[in-house]
Each structure stands twice: as C-alpha cells, then as structure tokens.
Image (tube, rainbow, N blue to C red):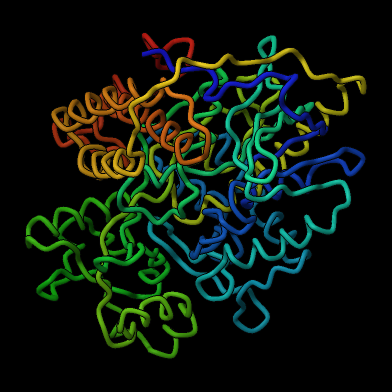
Length: 540
C-alpha cells in the first residue's frame, strides 16, 4: 500500500503558526549539541516529545569512546570500529569522527561535565570489541545522565533557544521539494504549524518496536517515519543492535546492564553456572555485541532457560559498587545484591544502525532537513555499532548539523513566509480499534520474527501481518499521539522487515539462520528506501 503523506488533516487558516530560524526535533545529546552550535543571532526551537530528560542519551550507561591512553592510537580505534561494522562502515567517516573524539570530550569537560578520574587522569574503561581502554565515563555507570544535566543547563542559558517539552511531531511540512518545518501537537495548544528556515532531526531510535528493549517509552521511530513520509532517503534499516545484557525479571521494566561490567571482569554463565562465551568466540565476554547476543540466545535455547546470568561475584565488591552504583541500585529493588548474586539477563533491542542517509555535515537527501544521532545512518557504525561510539557520533554530527543548518538559515531571506500546505479530512471509520492490543501484537511479532535470529519463514510471516495491520491502521486519521505512534511504529517495522527479507546473508547485527555466511560479492552494499519508490526499493 502507498504510505499516506500526512497523518492528520490540517489547513493553514485553521491552525496557529509559529516561525523560527532553526527547528531542532529531539532533546537528546545530538539535538542539544545541534542547538548549541547554532549562531546566537538566529532563533532556535527544540521540540521534545516528553520531558527533555526522556531520551536514549539520558539512559546511556557506558560512556564515550576516545583515544586518551598513551598505549592507544586513533588507528586502533578506527580499526576496532571497522571490524565491528561488518564491512559497511565508511572509512572516511570513521576516521573523521574518531579523530574529533578528544576535542569533543574536552569541550564537555570545559562545560562542566564531571567524568570519572583515577587521580588526575580520566578513568578509562573497556567494552566489547575495543582493543584498548578508551571509554570515558561519568557517575560510574550514568554517563548519559551527566551529559544531559550539563547540556540542558547550557541550553537553558541561551536566550535565542526555546524548548517546547511534551510536544509531538506529527509530520514534517514540505513545499516544492524542501522541508519547511513541522506540524506539531501538544495537549495545551493542539496542532501548530512551525515554519523553519532549516530543520534538524535528532529524534533518536526505535527500540520500542520490540517487546524486549533498553529504550525508553518515547523511542518509537517517529523521526524515521516522518522523514520517510516527507520524501527523505533511509538506509540500513535491517541492522538493529541487540544489547546482550538486559535485566530480565518477569513483570519488571527492562533495564540495561552496561557492557562495562564485562569490561571490569564480569562473566556470562548459563543456568548451570557454566561460562559459555569461549565456546562461541575466542574473545569471550568482550566479543562485539552482535556475537554476544547471538551466543546468549543460542545458550538459552540449549539450556531451555529464558535467560543467562551476569556474574560479578568474583570481582572486588568495592570496585563493583563504586563503578556501577546505578546498576546496583536497580538490582537491589528486586532483592539482588550484585556483589553476591548473579544477575538474570537476556538481549534486548538497543540501537538502530540504520536511519536517514546523511552526508559528512549531517545534510539529508531532503533539502532543508538535517539530521544527527541515532536517527541517521552516517556510515560510522556499518552493520554493527562498536560500544560507546554512539554518544561520540551524536556530539560530532550534532555540532556539524547545527553549524550547517545555521549557515543555510542565515542565507534565507528574512521575508520567509508560510507556504500553502494543507491536508484534507479522510473518510471517517466507525469501527473502533484497540490500539494497545495492536501495539503489543506488533512488539511480540518483531521480537519473534525480526529479532536476534531471522529466517525467510519468520520474516514472511512478519511482513504479511504488518501489511494487514497497515491496511486498516495507516488509512485512519487519529487525534492523539497513541494513534500516531502506532502508525509510525508500523511503518518503521515494515521497512525494517522488508530490508531484512531482502538481505539474504548474515552480516553484523543482521543474522539470517538460512543464510549464515557473509556474502560480499552480492551484499556489500546498502538497501535504500524512499517513499516515492515504494513499489521497488533500490540498493547502492
């Protein structure tokens, strides 16, 4: 079916208007850094779906990867990133981003971020896939929380930046082939048309499409969906990273158990207390995330148990409590002492490698639209992201997108006016829908058929179910975010499933049990999706 261009009816004579030079969609690290990069002579509006602290960035535990150890070098970090990326990283992007890491981290220190230290030196951790200690972290295991604290405070000091919290982006507004802003909604004012000279999309990922995920409730793929409907190009959507260790306790929320625990010596053991990672990879617990996630799922199946266990009981308890205070606190709520008890864990959807196609400055294929952070596919991560490269990417591309959008906005004539954009009312539906039931069914379907392991039969089943749901959900015009979120989730899940069906090989985080080998001859390329080519999507 053809994806609708706009989700709701609107007319410029019946909707309030707001004008700004630069519109930033998303309040995570990428969006905040973008806003801070805009020339203060220009006006900026940041839109956040929930409170400004509800983002994947805020919940990031591990840290930021950067070369600070004298035994390390940029080339080591580059090669580790490319090795994890399964042959789909863009080397020039990897080299540029990693080369900028020390500068971006020192900038954060200058702003007041309190990274952890050993004496007068930055404390450096190690995570899976890294050949050296290079993870800069804060508050032990709450780096994202510390970054968000400082960056939000800095944004609030900028008189040219306004933050609209609890505001939902329904769609990007386009006219004559360019992005002109966005149609937004909040409970206080209803719909508003925000006209912007340039727009930056930094809306994060889509983990909530899956039943098991580390992502907060807001991560429903809205940015990818609105960009696709507006005509921007998306790619690499089959590559979803599943974090190996998510706290698994029936009835509880899923909580990330940082990979840094394994960097400090934690073991993975099965229900019988046996370490098993060496059976799957010589790097053991410090293999890249795609390897560890697949090993855990295989071991769960072998032992007929719903999870494995993370074991820190042999590690110095003083170190454990100092290094992982947040994890210790969460586990304590369920009667677990991380220094004495094994922690039940299993994989969960964590990060989208795919997203909007952008160039080295964060410019998308849609004029007037820029993007940064998890919503993009920059070429840094390829088929599998190396741990702690995501906050780094958000900082680097947030800066570039903010600077680029500001330069472009400054060139737009000051007499910028609202173009004539509208969308008509669709025929009403009388049959009510249980949106929560469809959403839960979607999340279970993707976890079962488009999860850590995939095959043609499961992907075909997923595609057929998604197509059926899309036919009667996407044709409706809902009046609040519960409906719009579901429509966005269905669209992104459809594209992810389509990409996973097409890629008949195993590469990085995309594991096809019916095509277990990597096939560079046919598949060392990118699957690309554009709305105007829905009948036949392409590769490049």
